[in-house]
Image: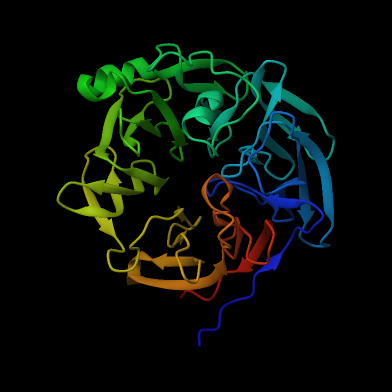
Length: 385
């Protein structure tokens, strides 16, 4: 029988807590505080009138500290809440709804000083100078669980609007610009028979470490189809040098290995579904963990770039989600934990583990329902060398 390290909850009832996605820092840069969201329900999607609490756990004392609230959140990506470089020891950023727009808020956790930016962000670069923004009202309609309710999509009746897409945001000045529009991508793909009557949306933006390129997913559902199709594009922050990187119809979770290589779960003709490490400039690729990483998961590199953290989805009869670390240099995986996911937490309500590294790569934070309710957990990384 395998002996696995014990996971410890850092949040507790009466609220149900989670953090959100796997590619955002939940720990402060000094390792002292860990962010989370909290609500008093977990059995339905968020409604326009709902508010989520934003708080942080003091990892030295165990104290939970209330910070503020947000009205723009979902079960999968939360409020895009995370610590904001270069002051990631005291400043956080998250999305909110103010008046008739979704916005992002820069918030000092000690002074409570609040700065509002005019667009809801889908990613923030590692340097903290550049952000990317999407239309979360459109995503709420096309991909429930990843957008925000409460506001209409201004381009709801347009299949691939020229005024909507991926926006760049200067986090210092607040200036924003439309980097890549849906109409531009529509023209690039040149698939009239498939795209002319299909509603397009963008999802999952991610800047490379130096903030010189970004990747994003383009999705659409062909008429009569049960599932959508996906392509991956990359571009410069101003939208120039647009490149179609993957066009096999299925592209899922991804993470930049460095400024030019992307790890991504995708389908490549003649190769099948795998994690691929793709050179964004040349298009060359290699399969990663072919015999071990055999299903899609929320993948992210450790800060030392030596290990890949990922998870799995539950399946009957055990309904267990595995948390694992893959070591590319040894083609070896280490199981960190297996966590029960009760059948009621499915679809939009599911609680994916969305594992996240601490800054020193010694701890993992994840969301889970294995003890009956949605809470945030930490577990120590086992010896890997």
